[in-house]
Image 1 (cartoon, rainbow, N blue to C red):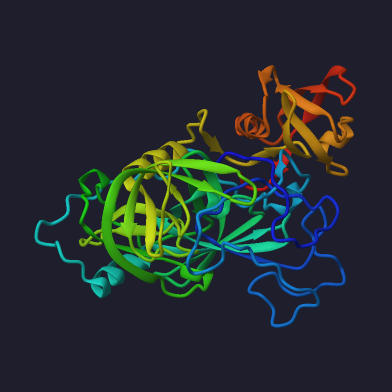
Image 2 (image 1 turned 180 degrees about the horizontal axis):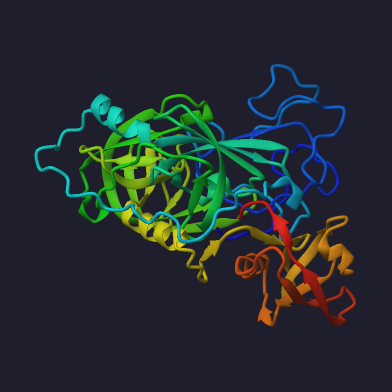
Length: 428
């Protein structure tokens, strides 16, 4: 999703250079942990585990304002980080490869007789194909939770990009088997909020039955299932009805003014909660027709302020599966990133004619190349960069190890070309 100038929200203190990767959180549960250094490591005087929260903490735990049961659709106010030197935090073994199992997709038409949704019966069919996702956000000293949909027995999982964005490690627990797996991100589409994970050494997992979202109609009974509240355990059912199709929302942070457009969504009247993101929206035949993505008490719907408790939005499954096939096939594009995320080691904001450097990470590529706060990045490999958002988009086309040429204007107005080798960072 697009990145904006972001700074710490909620008034908490942060260690020097503990910057964040810009990301949108529309409905996954996040927990802040003790302060950490710029590499995501806890300071020595704090020894509590990251997740779940310890019973006692020497400093007050910072909890993100989204983490209430009536979730507001907002974007976290975080600093855009174009590359922090934390590659060693992300597991390098068993990296996902392209051309994985493509045997997933539409599974058949709904039965005409199944018009009334039986919550218990549908939940019993769908729950085994759900995983609870837990992530560590090493740069933020935080943990987060969301949901995923199992596409293949060998562990390809569909979820939202914002569920895993910024993560330095990911775990997924299968509801069907009870097993917990380390997960790798195969790829993601930031603008459509879709990501595919691969669970290491998984086999024999129950898989979801995929429906046809083009057949969804207003008034259909639906059921949302997911890791509501980030509590783990069995998915919490959220029954309801479809209230509108092809909806566009602006997910915005009223404190920072940043926003993100999501289009073509299914709108439902159902109690979709924080933590449900990435989970299945299913019909009366227990077929997945959407990916739960947003819930709101304060979203903008088609430009109008709207939203009340019990409203939710889902990405149509046809669109999500099409993107998943592209990701699993390893087909990168202007919107689809395959593999690890490239970082250069600066936090930026919108500047005059480009992305202005706010801070340079110690020992990171940018510092080694001589970049300093106040410099403005105006191009990468000749591609114009006119904002922090554009910088993120351009970096999505690169990978760790890429040698980049940055066009940089100093605070004094002098322009120069700066060679920088990208390193591995947290998930986009």
